[in-house]
Length: 484
Image (cartoon, rainbow, N blue to C red; front, side, top):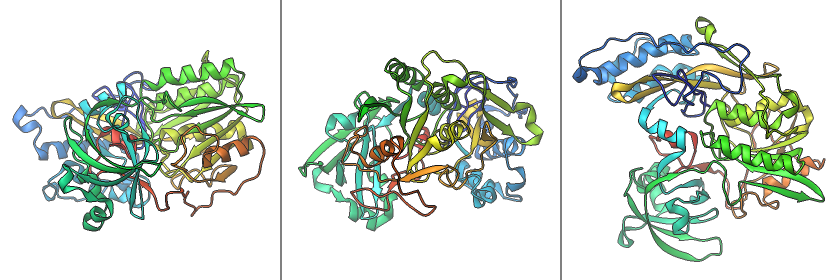
């Protein structure tokens, strides 16, 4: 999750955010309303060396250490006595600094350094460069597309949900199969074979479509926008035995999601919808401000009530925020909500799910699989002369009942859960897709098998799946797992 503002993630020397990866909002410190708005903090003064020395690795390491010492949520869990000279990469040094917290599952690579320019482009407009698809890997080993974005190169070239990638190359003559790549270098070899996230990167892919047709395509990476809500399946009203059920699939919590969410809920309101399926199965997080808006749109009857809390370390208590539910003209008074999640559902997605627990009790459920487990948020600390943005875990998030600490995911915290698979051979939004069918069952009052702490949702294509991730993900890939 990310906050946005002068002190949040996307746009300022010091930005507040909370999310699975990075991100920010570029605006006031908290959005969605606050009981007492916190002032935007000022970063500690840093030395201003000459330009040639300012961005040396040693200078950047010194700056990162200083910011973590000041802002990190778990100051007692920062490694002591590290020799910066032992590290040739800034992120490797930051990883080593927060390793003690990571060992306690408090910071699983959430704290990192990214590009200010790259991240601002993603959070303000949802823009990235690549094929514009999400890949899911299976232990077979197999690689499938689970989502393809409208207007991006992948969908135009024939890649869509359920497409299997059989082989990757730079030409027809050097295609290498997925099993061969995995055998040679694990899934990192597959990520590497797909090429860098730079405009103009070309690849040849041999693919199998859901109808079993095998073809070879050429595809070139270029900039694309991620529509937060798909124009093909992102929102609809499902007639379930005469009951109107609203369905909404949010891909990522970025700035453009504001308008898309409002339009979707305006339609729900006009149709009298009070029961909703919220599909967040591949959503790795994003802006807290968008998460707060999402919660407000579900809670028209609770305007003015506390939504959530954001709490910093004691020395930064002046930055604590109480989010109040604002009155949104498009909001509905949801009476029952089914959230579809997986182990890739994280951060801002979990914030929205957790927020409904005190309000709906047994009338809110988690469908599918356990979530990732990220009840903390990052702030963005910028050093513009080096294009460095340090995303540092600096705050914890709690719902109105002060419930948080779900580091092992939300399944054990929810009053109701229903285990279900992710059927990649059916479109998202299809009432017959396994997780959506289970969600409709919950809303209709039917019983289900709860999600166990060890359960892993299965798909018809195989088990042991994970969304493909490069060794060094860019800003977009941090919050949109599987994005290429």
